[in-house]
Length: 144
Image (cartoon, rainbow, N blue to C red):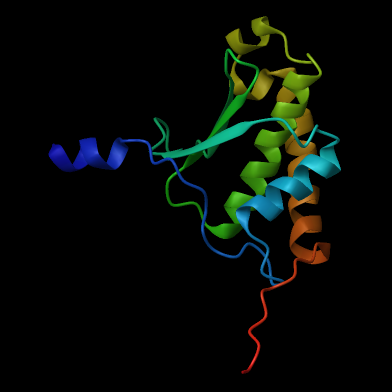
């Protein structure tokens, strides 16, 4: 029982590995998606990794009272899942910023929520564009 409690506690961190072949990091990916989606780069987003209540749930976005957002990602996502899930959740940030989500939509089944269509439609092309076309400069080591 103790192991379950520890495993289900939220971890406040970002994915630490490279997310494409040019060495882009989690923050590089966030910046790319914000720009592509036309979201103000000054928007404040906090991230948590935690064990999801449902096995097929990869992430969700919460608006916070102070105008910021929290994106929660499932523990153990593969890099490709991080890319797609982050794109999906940042589409929701854009929708929330533009006041395109009505609170009554949350009473509907997940797949019947109108705002999910756009997030599903945009997330994979955004993730592919980031993975194949976005380049970040890898730090170079100079020989002394």
